[in-house]
Image 1 (cartoon, one colour):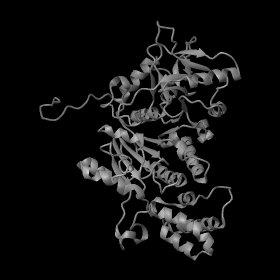
Image 2 (cartoon, helix red, strand yellow):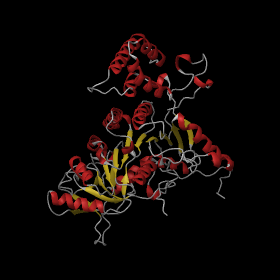
Image 3 (cartoon, one colour):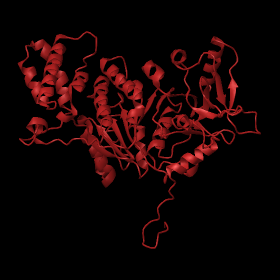
Length: 506
C-alpha cells in the first residue's frame, strides 16, 4: 500500500519549479547569468548537454514544429508518441532523468485510415496515451461510426462477452484502451463561417470551378456583407434558403446536394435556428463538441470510416484545427498529424489543410502552438519541410524521397553528420563525424547512412538546435554553437505509455 500523510491523504509528488528546471539546464549549458544569449537558447527546439552525456532534450516550453518521416516500421510513430508524452505527461509521472513538465499542454491529433471496414480497422496509436491515468483522451469519430464504437466501449467497461458475435473489428478498434472517451464529431452554426464553408465546398483560390460553386461563393459573399451590417453570425439555414432560391439546374444541384448532405451528416441535430423548436432528423437532439482547452487532455479526431473520403477528412480536419486554435487559453497547445500521407494528397481539400498548417507554423510563436507532422513520404508537402524547425528522418529506401529532402533541408548536399564517436571511449560528448566526398558522393554516403539506420534511430536536422558554447574570445561572451547545416544521429527513447504499434509477428 502507498504511504499516507497524517490526515489520511496520499502524499503529493515532489514538485520542481520551472525556474529550477531552467536554471539547471542553463547550468549544464555553461551559461553565465550575465549572458545576453539566454533568449536564443530558451527558444531553441532542441538542447544537448555537452561534455557530460549524449542525451538530447526536447524543449517543450518553446513553440516549434517537427516533421517526421520514414518507412513503415522505422520508428516514426514511436517518435510522435514520445513527443506527445513530452507535452502531456505531468512531471510526477516521468522519472526525473527524463525531464520535468509541471504544466502539461493540451493536444489534438488528426487520424484517418482508409483500411477500415466491418472486418478490419486499427485505432490511432496516440490514443494509447490513455494508459496513463493523468492523461485524458477523447476520440471524436464520424457519426456513421459512433454506434459501433460505443458498443465496443460498453463491452469493455461491463465485460459483456455476449456482444462478441455481433461486434465487428471496427467496433473493437478502441476496446484495448480503457479510459478513452468516445464522442461523435458534431458541428453547429457557430462552428461554421464563410471561410470554412468555402473549404467544405472545395472552392480553391485561383482555380477553375464549376458554375454552381460560383453561385455558392456569391451567396456566401452576400451573407458575409449582411453579417457585417447586422453583427450576426453565420446561419446554415439561411444559407440553405438562399441556395433553394438560386437559379440552378438539376444537373448542378446534384453534386451540390451531395456535398451538403455530407456536411449535414456532421451537423448537430436540433441545433441552429431551429434549436428549441423541435428535434432534428430521427427525433433525437444532437450533442455538440466542447473545444475548451484543458491541460493534459488529448483529443483524437479519428475519421476512419467507409463513408468518409480522404478529401472530406481533410475538410473536417481543417475545421477542427481552426476551432482548436481559436480558443483563448493560457494552456500551451500541440497539434499532431498522424500518418499524414494517407489523407494529405493533391486534392483542393488537402491543399486547404496544408495552407492552414503552414499558417499555423508561421504564427506558432504568437499562438503558442507546437506542430508535429508524421508521414511515411516526405513528398506530402515540401513547403512544410521548408518551414518546420526540426526534421526527423528515420530509415527509408526510396531515392525519390532523398531527392525531396535534398532540395529542402539545409546543406544536405555537403554536410557532416553529428554523432557520438564509436571509437572514443574516453569521452561521452557529442562529436561531429564528417561525410567524405563532395556533391553527389556526399549525398550517396548520406543515403547509405539513412538506409542502414536501425529501428528507432534517426537523423535530426534542426539548424537552430543549440549544441554548446564556443570558446570565449577576450572580453566577448562565448558564442552559441548551433547544429546549423549538420545533422544529428539519435536514438529515440521508448514510450512511457502503452505501445499500440507493435509489429504483429507470426
